[in-house]
Length: 271
Image 1 (spheres, helix red, strand yellow):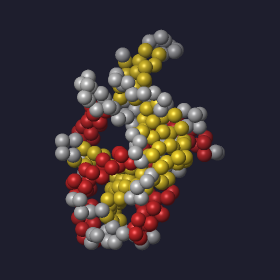
Image 2 (tube, helix red, strand yellow):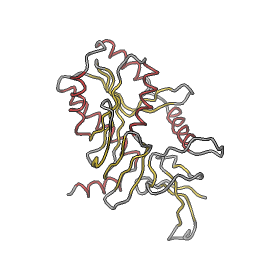
Image 3 (cartoon, one colour):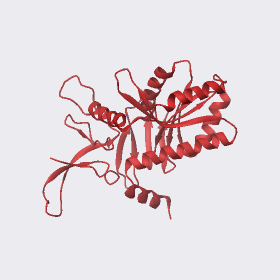
């Protein structure tokens, strides 16, 4: 079975949220190899870091070591990836030539690191690593900052190793354990915190009627569409909702909002 067919099957069966969580688990699995080959560290997934305004910033994966903390932003896309360090959006092109935009993961992880540093103290080194699935190809990705790594998942071990060998120890084993215990509390959050996080993203990324409101930041939108003032956001996956028309059945001809991430996300909303 070809890789392209496998990707198509995965994308048709599982939604974006499942694929994202699965990608984070695979990244965590790669970090076990780092430990296996003698570089000790502790891994945590899905940390809800508190922000000054009472909101939270969710980090996919962290790897806590005596060198500092490796902060991973995991992307489980398939297709060709295009982007650069400074752009607001990156693009993923699927085999059928369909293009979708997603928010620059370097900027996304930079925000995570900002609030993590605020929470634990700025003296602890934080390393930004953007991890893409092996299901995609980093076709044209430009990163000028040597402190930021953009890789495919199978390069996780080698990337951590290279950083590990280039920096000195800054934490003791006891300090690593204490830091792990402090951050682990941010993974054991109840449903209310998670729902508040999703609601905050939806509120923040849905434009208001105020002329000075910030432009919406959407996880993935059609690359050839400009942002519109009336854009609606899918509450399930963060993509743009688009106006569709029912073609068959008793409701044929009726319009509704559907997620632009279909078929991976099948959220719909009545008008």
